[in-house]
Amino acid sequence: MQNKIKTFFMSLCVMFGVVAVCHADDTVFENTVDIIEEVNADNSIAANEEFSADAIEDYNVEGSLFQQITDLEQEKVLMQLEKERAQLNLDLDRLAAEKIKLHMEIDTLSGRAEQQQQEFETERARLEAEAKRIEMEKEAMANKQFDDAQKPAQKQQSFVAEQPKDVDIEKNYKLLNVFGAGAQLQATVQDLSNGQNKRLSVGKDLDGWNVKSISLDDGVVFIKDGNVQTLNVGNKS
Image (cartoon, rainbow, N blue to C red):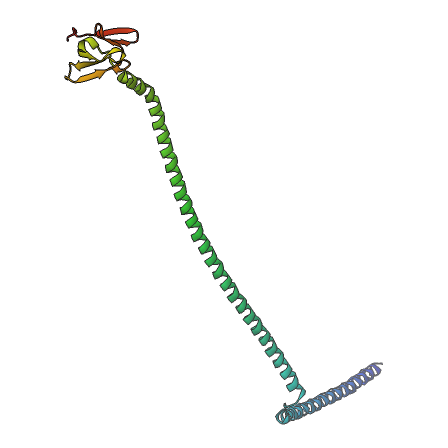
């Protein structure tokens, strides 16, 4: 029985050994295949790189699609730059026009300011002249009112001053003679204050006294406001 068991275990060992050897051979084979593939791949890469370098060196870009694309891109960029430059020129022209317009507006405002200043000065001078005229008129009116207020007193004083003083004919004059005939009788009297002689006839005045009559008997009769005075040859001062 034991021999059978031993034989069985030996058989198992042999089987495991064979399997192991087979597996080892498969692994070696696979590694060998991988190595070969890697070598081929490296050779292919090297060959491709050599081909690419030669192709790049021999490649002519003139007239190629790449050159056309590049030219189109450059033209596009140049057109965009030209467009931007044109827009910039337009902006500069617009700014220049705005600057000119601004200067014109400034000049206009300056001129308008000067004109307004002149108008203001003229108006101020006119108002000052008007105020001065009104002040003069007020002063003249005040003076006129004062004069009007003083006039009654002045008139009263003037009236009193102009009123002839009541002259006493009999004391101030002396009858010198009576001459003429009938209604044509005249008289000569002398002013005792200065010695002047005055000739009188009926109807004439002497210092506010009116000659009422002249006669040889009664002399010269004077009348004033109902009062009567007489000068005859006998009157003396």
